[in-house]
Length: 231
Image (cartoon, rainbow, N blue to C red; front, top):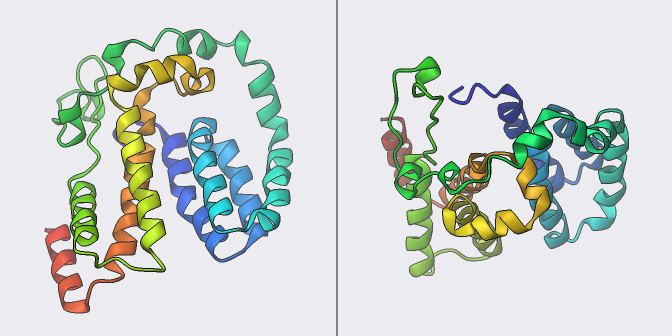
C-alpha cells in the first residue's frame, strides 16, 4: 500500500505458498506458483529465487523440484524471454544505471522507524517512502538471539533459525551504503532499480522466524505475546 506497487505486494504474497509447497513436497503446486511469481513481478522473483534454491538444497529435495523449476520458467517464457532479451530497449534499462547513487540507500535509523508524511499515500512531497522493517520484526529477532543465548532452540528448527537469521542480516547489509561496492560489481542486482526492494529479505525472514520461535512458546506466554502484538 505504501509503495503503491501492487506487483511487489502480489509477489510477496506468493512466497509463503511457495515455501509451503517445498515443505509439503508438492512440486505441481510449486511449478504453478513459481510461474505465477515470474509473471507477477520479476524483481521479487530475482530476490526470491536464491532463497528457494537454497531451501530445496538444504532440504535435499533437488530431484523433486528441479524439473518443476524449469517447467515454470518454460510456462512463463512468453513473458520472461522478451523481458530479458529486449529490456535494453526500454527506459527501465537506462534508469537502472542511473539510480545507483549512495543517497538511494535508506539510513540505518529508517529501518527502525520511518515518519508518516502528508503526501500522496503518506509519501513525502518528492515521493519519499518509509523503509521501516517493523517493530515486531525487530522484537522477533531480539527474542531469537535471547533464546539462542540461553540455548533454548534445538533441533529440528535450529538450522532453520540460523538460516533465516542470516537472510535477515544479509538484507540489512544490502540496504546500507557499505554494500554499494557489491551492488556496483554485480550487474543483475542493479536490475532491481531500488535498494528498498531488498526489504523483502528481512521482512519475510523475520516473519518466518516468528513462526518458528512462537511455535515453541507455551500457550499462556503465546497469548500474552499475541496480545502485546495486537496492542
